[in-house]
Picture 1 (tube, helix red, strand yellow):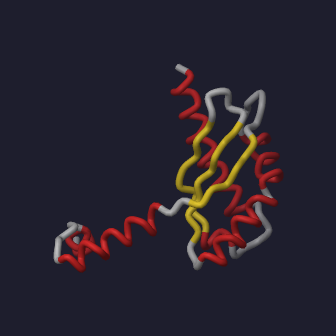
Picture 2 (spheres, one colour):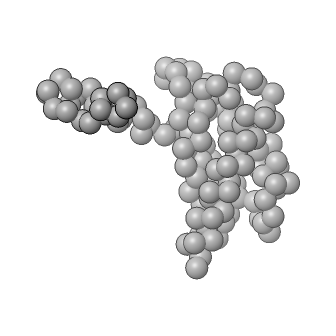
Length: 124
């Protein structure tokens, strides 16, 4: 039952953090380059890892992660207003490189001449 609750809280946090990043933060450039990919919450709901995908080079990604770390307190405050929990989790932002990794694998497979099936999906 604890796993199910933490999963529900994580999904709700993902939704709310995405909305906060798009609507509440004063930096308009952030909403165009950030996607909240996943949120992992500890069983006691004290800590949350927020995995974000940031479009751009490594320097831009580090800059945006710094901005997110500085805004973590504000985001946590906004979450407290939106989600009813006894304790709002401490937020830690992590870079999610899943999209980069999958694109790199697809490129390697194309070089090898293997069909990934992604081209068929694009045509439909």
